[in-house]
Image (cartoon, rainbow, N blue to C red; front, side, top):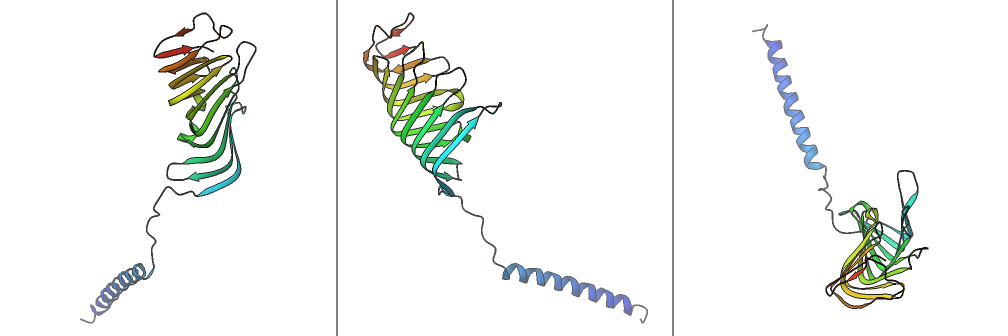
Length: 207
């Protein structure tokens, strides 16, 4: 019996140590307040005045610029909301375009900019073509694709020609303009080019 006493004492001490450790861990877990996971809501987590964001190509050349009087960033969808927005596209080989609106939302990692409120896109004139202006309540820009479109009523002014329609799409790479459901089309002879066509429901023009 005396020979077994040290072993029994060791077992008792080990059990006491395990129970003490379990109690201490349980007490600490109940005593320390653990914050629940942060609830992500559509609330801004950062903001800035006189906001300017410039995107460059692989060579480091600036191709797109977005600026505004005020910016708020929303973490839930990683979007930016800009007040008094101005978007400038200056991709090599394409005419410079300037878009303005009361507000704009940039999302999809900068691949989409939705301009709302007195939205206007101005494509600067070059030696071959007059300036082009598109106005609508909302215009969607795809900067990487050099594309702008809307499903809402839009007014297009190309030189001395005007087109009113519901829905439009302009590709600045190909200079292809489409005005859908055209209701009022006035094509100036100075702006008409071979291959241009005007249809009752869809007007396609390469300005």
